[in-house]
Image (cartoon, rainbow, N blue to C red; front, side, top):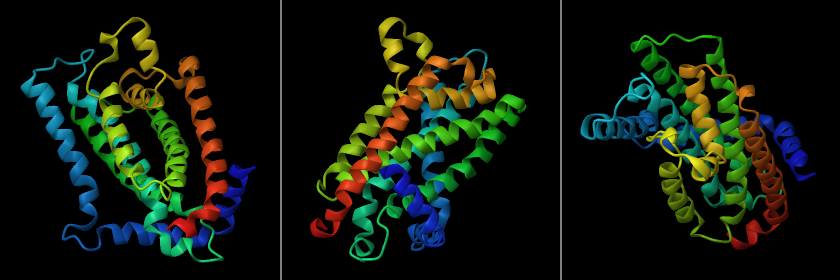
Length: 265
């Protein structure tokens, strides 16, 4: 199976994989004055701008007696991880074309190498989420540990989708632009800055099929409602069916197309 084959490649070459991931993280911010701080500045600025627009400008009310910023921030920050991870993985094969041409290099490592920096940056944003909740007097409880589970969900979903995009990217140079457009549409279609409780009927049911709704809502459950994920059996099943399908499909497509990468790059 292609998926198991890719996992074996990662395990057998784990030393090289972590070296590449570390170097990628350093190289990404090596030429800027503020360095790795830029990884946090852009999402935080967007977070503050949208908070100002919706809570100050449009005077959005609290969501279920919870301050808007506390309700909004966890969902936005996990979406920011997802967007950055998929975009980075999409461009990975083209950016590492010099490794693709090496005969003995395991190409399957490349997309995951670009995923790792996004993971570490998001873990840094956990501090922001924790501090924000504590500032408003919201204390962590046992259910808050679910954030680890939902972040794992986000990693799996981003990896599956990113593998597919990375596989197609060498053959279609405009896939990066397509991903950017889809991400922008997806941000507004996902209940991140608006409450899905304001939508009812068939439309709400369709929107809840979005895997990122499951993850964003899960981050909120971890801190605000403390509802365990097993109390959402329907959306949990739908999420994992979609995610596992993407991972298996992405692994198969990558394995099938990767021998041709060197010829088209």
